[in-house]
Amino acid sequence: MITSKTNEFIKHVKSLHQKKYRDEYKEFFVEGKKLVIEAIEEKMNIIKIIICKELFEDNIDFKDIEFVDKKIFEYISDTKTPQGIMAIIKVQEIQKVKGDTIFALDNIQDPGNLGTIIRTLDCAGINNLLLSNGTVDCYNPKTVRSTMGAIYRVNVQENVDLKFKLNELKKEGYKIIITSLDANIYHYDLDFKDKCVIVIGNEANGVSKEIQSMADVKVKIPMLGRTESLNASVAASLMAYERVRKNYK
Image: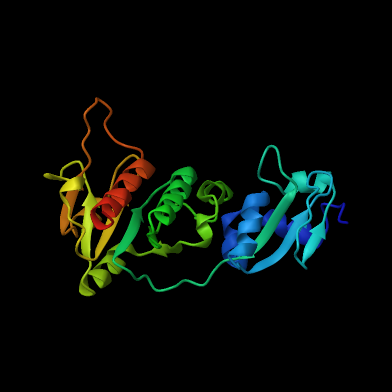
């Protein structure tokens, strides 16, 4: 059992709280029984499971387990009330985006919003997500928790040059759909019959002007009250499920 903060493995785990080390090692961590069990079931590349027996009494059928005391687990945990189980996971290799619907996020900043969007896309059967340069890290601990396991199933490409990527996808026959308050049609006017990339913008500023200029179609979501804009994850959810409604009647 590990009981020291100076242990090399513990220092490595602690470093994964920072994006620069997650990027360097291409690893991230998840906490809690649900996320760990789901990682096993989804056959993720799990490097190690960490358990504190003082906090977690269940048995986990996994060969690479490291036991730590309560003080150490609380030190490496990112939650206020840790459950006593954590997994260190290798980041999956990026897969080519494919399918008839792709979502792209332009400079989304809130990790909770990103996690909710990933979770929603998984629920809606949409498996591809592009994150522009400047969008929050999808392996941020808060983002990972917010996905509720969907991070294992959605193909997320980070640090994407969105202008370049959208141009590539246009050549492949994808229609670029931008959410914008300046649009003349509503999101429910779309038929979603063509292959499309749906772009959701920054929480405060929306989709950048540069990306808006690439739109084949601009749409808006009805705003009947006095609030100026929807939360980015809500906007993404409405777009995703309008696509579901049109295609799965």
